[in-house]
Length: 65
Image (spheres, rainbow, N blue to C red):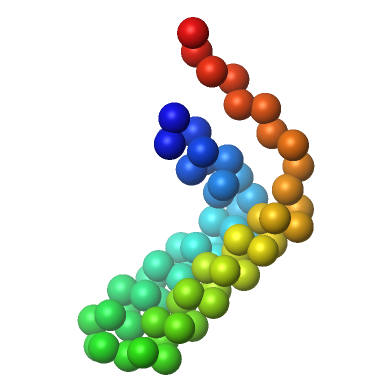
């Protein structure tokens, strides 16, 4: 299910914090139509994904039958 996948993606607290910061910056940038801040928010989110990929440990997701 998509919720389980979302939780495993944001399992790393650094990734989660970076995505929250990127989301806040993105909302601010969209409000003021600031292209530079939009790019900064996207870069911060990508850095979070890279950190998650580097520190990724195999995770077993238990599914209900």
